[in-house]
Image 1: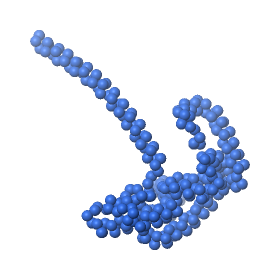
Image 2: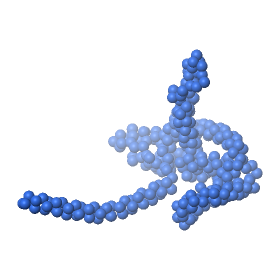
Image 3: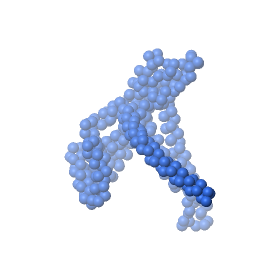
Image 4: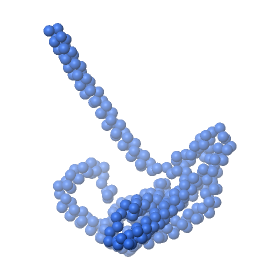
Length: 323
């Protein structure tokens, strides 16, 4: 969790888990002591620890959902000027440790921060709509459609990665005079994509939780028979209204995401994720290659033994026939 372990120390992670399984009391005692020390360190270095803890936890989680690394760094630098990049992991862990002992204060500060971010999102989204003429001026999708009309012999393909160097097979980046405008707008308003991603994840979670309380699958208890039909109808109406409200919010959020990707294109995933996937693929390929090298020898040995056994059985059958 802390992110402090080096590569050499991480080699001992399985042994550490095994030691923890046999010494759980000592482990939890040391963890409580470390948590208290980190919480005390956070409180001594902050004038408003509840507000700072809420901002560090919430905004860092939001920054991880921003699909543009440069935009995420600029957003965190602007919103958390006191959070140094070198000690970001330690300050984040200290904020979590302080929150464990002051959950009520951090929850209230988080609610105020959410209200502030909602207001900022509404303001900047309206500003983005104004600067782009409601996502029409300089749209990447509109530029591709216009190019398709001019050159119908080339099939139009929407690019997978549209930031920062988007291109179509029949559209050169230097011919697109709005490419610089899109990059500047994406650098400034890129955090809006992360906000939409977080909003959609939360709404989907609320819909899944709401589905578990569907009154159609519930049995009413402690209700008079004369009032059972009315109570069932009241609960179903409340359930349908809550679901319709969440679905309406989700539809608006998805529509905004469609507008964003239609103007800027689909974002490029972080390079770190690609490197991780490549390393995993190389490791799995190496392991599979090793298995494939060993398997033929084993199968060959089994095959030769089976052939010898069949020959022996055939020889016994011929001898018995002669007798």
